[in-house]
Amino acid sequence: MANTPPAVKAFISAYDSEPLAYQNLDNAIEAVCCGEVFKSLILALVNSPAFSEELGKEFEAAGAIAGLSACRGLRSCLNFSLGRFFGLLAEVIAAFDHAAGHEWATFANRVNQSNLGASKLVERLIRSADGSFYTDLAARLVDENPHAVYPTSSYRESEAHVVSASDDQIIEAVMTSRTFTSIRVVENCLDPEETVLRDMYVSHGRCVCLVDQNVETYYGEQIDKYFKHHGIHLDKLVYRAMEVDKGIRTVEKMLGDFKSLGVCRHEPVLIIGGGVIADTGGLACALYHRNTPYVMLSTSIVAGIDAGPSPRTCCDGFGYKNLFGAYHAPVLSLTDRFFFKTLREGWLRHGIIEIIKMAAIKDLELFEYLEQAGPALIETRFGTLNCEPGSEISVLSQKILGAALRSYVEAEYGNLYETHQCRPHAYGHTWSPGFEIEAGLLHGHAVAIGMGFGAYISYRSNWITADEFHRILKLISSFGLSLWHDVMLNKETLWASQEKIVQKRGGNLAAPLPKGGVGKCGYLNSMTQEELYEAISAYRKICQDYPRQGVGIDPLCSDVGLEDPSTVGHSLMETVKAHSTEPTELLSPV
Image (tube, rainbow, N blue to C red):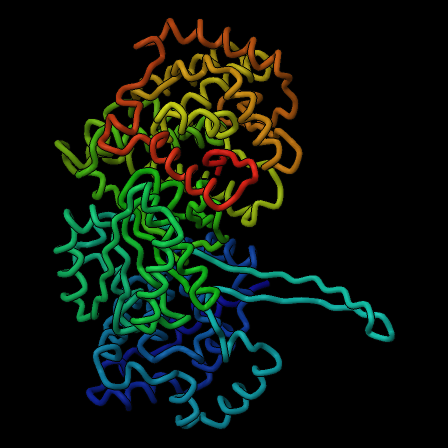
């Protein structure tokens, strides 16, 4: 059993907080760090099974989830600065005892604001009255637990086991890598009273920040004021982040900026924006030093519940969508609905489909929340516009965001490297990649059509009832999202998409569809061309009975001020042809 929570509780109950108020800070640190109680805490932290499911369940059972991430990070505490150590320790303590946590947070602030804050914990412990103990511990950990004393990143660890033939001419190895991350729904995180960003960066002394140009227009001054208020130097890098900017040159520019600023391998970059900068900035972090951590502050619906916490970072190249990429999840992902106040309705509508997707395929309760909220989600910008704090729609909005994130993360992180295709979050993404670009559709509307059509396939297969099928369509339509577009009449386009998706999915169709009821998932692995064409014709007739005959509100990229992707795609295709005489496919699926 993990013994970290008991060790933390023992430390809280046994510790006298009087030394925290000593006027001489170095004496206070000496008093805090000496004694058997502190030794026991340090040993529990460095030996903690940081990546185990067991540790998470113990924190969950104790109602102390808010301290879990800090506890996991503290396995590398000997290598931390004093400021970072006491800051994280305060977070862990606060999760078990709020009053005690406040005292330790005040002490951590004193340390961070002093000239002692940047000193390493292990160096200070070696100089303490218990120095011989910590000298021996540090030396022993080099062999026994190198992640605890010389970590490259406190968020990751790796292991391997190797066997070889007697003459070493054949060697076989198995490698494993584990990482952890935090996903949080926060309120108004740029308010100086909200300390989640401060706590991440104050011990580093600065924040290197990639910002979407549109976000800078609305929130740039507020970002500046936040970090200035907390005395944290801000290196802000502003990038235009439209779909046409999602190329390798953007990533290269980011890498150059990181190099010029001397970004360290243990220093999390802050990315603020929507899906494009989440993808490109995350990829730049994955490439820089081969692994630089980053924090994602999402300002759009798509980023907030999908692209932001996603481990899949990417950019387009040579006319192919997401040709280059890496699996590199943020160490902290923040979703703050207060950014939604400045989004156009068309962008909100386009993003909500990613929530409906998870609800229809994985979470009935979330589906019911969406039915309850209805179009008010859009009208009130998720309870942030023209409604009182604590109102029904405000509370419901937070529940929806939290449930959507939990469902997405459960599905995505259990298959972090996409090593199999039982991926419920790919619902709506089987046939839509084939017609999204051709029709000039917003991604959300294309996925909505794919979901509606997929629900019909599920109904035809007797996987869901007629009532369940129409329940899904009604929810999609109620938000003004598309069920139909005449591009579906180009049946060969959908068949070509199906053929390409089979290639992408390792030779299987593996189309996730509702099965066994709303909120449950199954996988369709076979559909002939004739069956597909028959389904399209029948589905079209059903859509005629829905509002707008199934056509969504502002479904096209051009409707919300974006360039027509089919035009952009054509120019990219010309680039591909200039580089190769081989046959190519236009902007292949994600």
